[in-house]
Image (cartoon, rainbow, N blue to C red; front, side, top):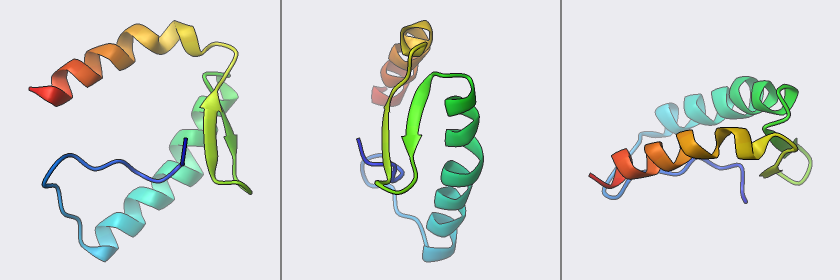
Length: 70
């Protein structure tokens, strides 16, 4: 999966907002999740893969998806 942010339908960000989100995602959030082994983050390929402990977080991801669709 690409490491680019995913926007909600009809969500629009200005270039500064998008840059801020990308920076935080690539330099803060994804490295923290990788340290916890929830994801594997490949900075060179700009990809995110499931980590060894991914299944531990799956119920929370499903809840987020349900809330996002409402």
